[in-house]
Length: 208
Image 1: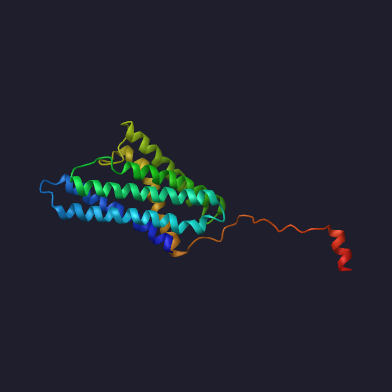
Image 2 (image 1 turned 45 degrees about the vertical axis):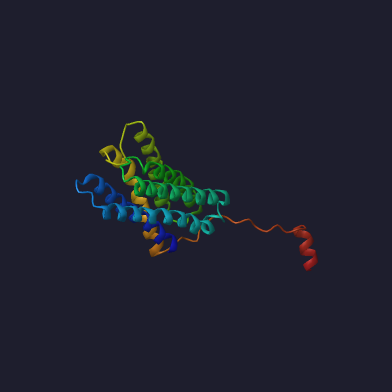
């Protein structure tokens, strides 16, 4: 439930904060409160990013210890990227169209670390894990296309940009809701069987 609430928190706060920042730079009056509120919200989303990585470590470690650590590091990096954007907006009060791209790139890579573990461990339904893999792969492709000028997923999202954003956005809505409602599944990864010394015959003779 904690992971679900944190996951939903950074998704919702980033969306609202990004909308407010966009509104500030699109408005002729430019009310300072709109920018400050938007920056505070995306700042909270950055803190929630790092908290998700920390909360997921004990869940992922039994299944993929190295990827659990990598996911934590990537989530912290994403949080720092968001906080750096907050500092830029507060100090410069100037527009930065692609400020979300570093966070999107780190989020995509972190998601591609997380979702295969969810798939193999069966901690969530298989269909949801596959949606996450597809969604984060498209998000990473969208970042690359944005940098190449093919599609815009940043400031002014183009119709093509929606294709890159929608599947990952759907996963980041369904995944936390599932965790809040029912939590993780028990998982089905086969555990190592303890090794016993001695032959079966020897044990039978001893028992006799």
